[in-house]
Length: 195
Image 1 (cartoon, rainbow, N blue to C red):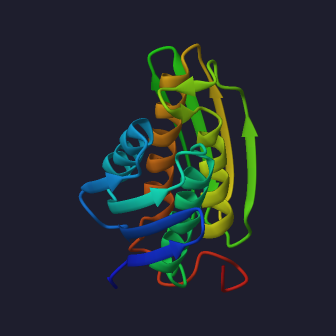
Image 2: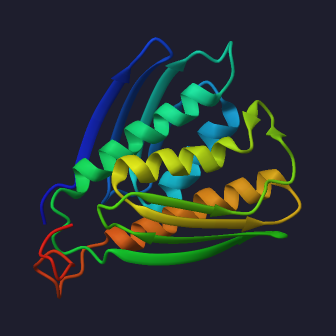
Image 3: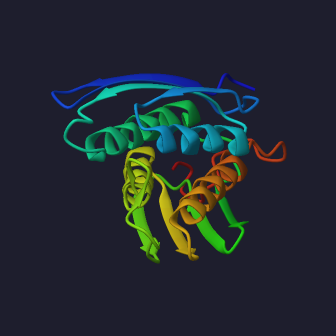
């Protein structure tokens, strides 16, 4: 199997970001975004997706968390697309439902090359520490649009921490499933011959 890794950087007036991704890792991560809860979510994403992930970000957190979270989603999406290459042999589709106590998150993904994003639900509290709860939705959207995913997410629950954590874990598990190489397939999983 070819090496399915990628690295990318992004530097703007709002953020400086470095990301590395290994799709066939062990779930190891080193994350420093300046937002404790977001670090925890990215670590959970790596752990449950079995991705090796490093993320370093110096963002304009004196303003808020928006640019940091959004731009990390952009760069991680670019890394995901780069690591997948021509997508030869991948499973392509996956869905996962993940509970965390009273909360449950559902994720359906198609690694289609046609970026679309759909979200259903609302977070129960507006903030989790210094993390704006709705930024979980925006992170997933930025990831999907930059990785070329069709991504459907839904959440329900009573505690925003549980809702967001279930969402990150379901996203990780579904992406692990969808990007997994199927030994029975030697081509790109599309009747068009490409994704």
